[in-house]
Length: 146
Image 1 (spheres, rainbow, N blue to C red):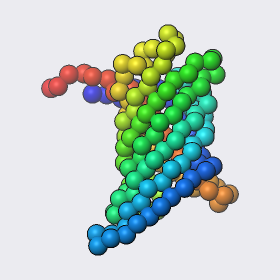
Image 2 (image 1 turned 90 degrees about the horizontal axis):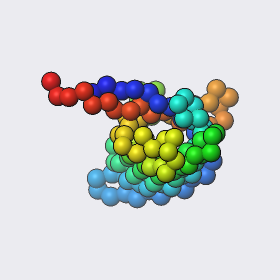
Image 3 (image 1 turned 45 degrees about the horizontal axis):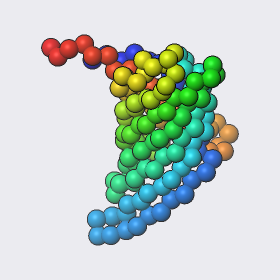
């Protein structure tokens, strides 16, 4: 398998709600976040999504995104992605996941049959005002099992 980059997304979460609950094994939590941003690359689009991640007792997040890409040329592309966001030594999170698209626009119908990989990270803004999430979406190209 090889990866062929399709687009990069940068987004923020202007609204978020979270709950945490503890037990003998530690503290777990759930959040609900609204994401807003843009994609660039082969898909130049407005990015809007909702995330309902679970926070595990080891502080890893398990994101569950559903959203829409509104392309600059007028297409609507729905997507869903899930994965894992783990803390790095610097305290930031690295993201890995899988993503699928659904569209009825003929120009982008090829996305309906593709499984994509997500790789990214949460980055602190230089001015200290918060964080941005940046991730790359790449098509997984099947090359056969060796």
